[in-house]
Length: 229
Image (tube, rainbow, N blue to C red; front, side):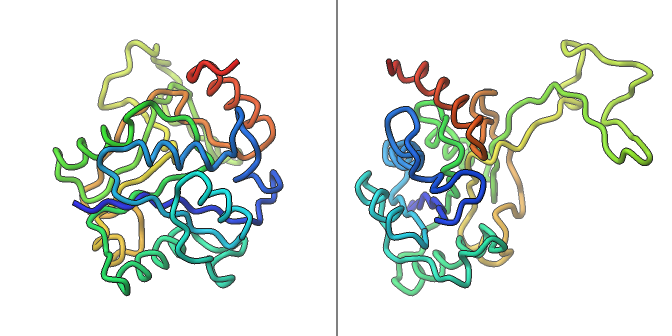
């Protein structure tokens, strides 16, 4: 089975300039996701899609393929991740290299357990899913609509964490990675389609880097997990 890990990395980050190649625990942020995908026994290719020559250079240095620079039309602030995914799928189809599975890997989620990609792929196959997202359990009580407040739980009978039933447990979509059958991805033009699976990951894998504070938090976690002094 051919499986492509696809890592989108625009050059125009607003929150943190050149975020994708900013050093994190000794290596560029994007390098963590590239190396984790390359370490998989089941992923057959690791492709980075970027509009930035410098990101392309760094990605290649760490072993990823960068077969094209992303067109400006799908590289702006309003461009969707799906547009970049579909652009890559179109490219691969033209080359007769269309994969069976397409894994969207977010470079901004650098914390992943060893073998996590392979574990998720095997889980995906075992359950015959069409698409899959990573999640982690959430124990936070959420509210919405300040003008007319409503809660995600029964506040008149506030549950204890240990008393929450499995079917009532809420999960946070981590954004770390998604797996989709490529044919269905192209048909639906969406990463989530058909029979959707939830792959549970530890809480520390839910961290996403959008700010300098996120960088500091993730750096400390990575140093501990990887015994970096």
